[in-house]
Image 1: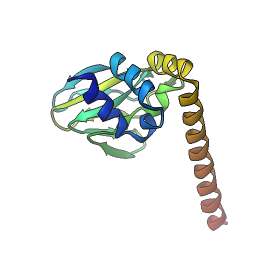
Image 2 (image 1 turned 180 degrees about the vertical axis):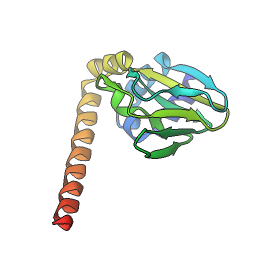
Image 3 (image 1 turned 120 degrees about the vertical axis):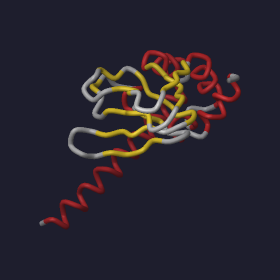
Image 4 (image 1 turned 90 degrees about the horizontal axis):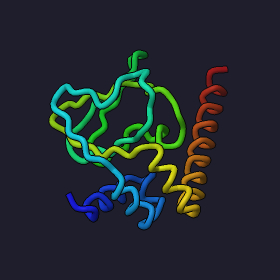
Length: 146
């Protein structure tokens, strides 16, 4: 696919769209396409996480050992936190059908943030807002359990 198609895909992913067109263009140039068949593992729980994945087509079951699971379909960003911090994969992602992803390495993502400081600030603000919202939700749940 063309770089323009990848940029259009990235623009449909809220976290990447807030970076802006110039940053998305750099990501599109550096992203790698990977294809998976039914039952193939995108990654396995516990593995080092060094990249995030945008689902171009298909779907993945993302499940952890604690029983939680979700389905990530077209335009979903899987492994968002791995783009900004070294960590272990908290779940296993398995293709539910023939699927294609764009892999964005953490090193590429960090280079983009370093070279586009306005994008980095917008990302920081978004992550802070999400953290505050999550903390507020936990406080409300905690208050109802007392």
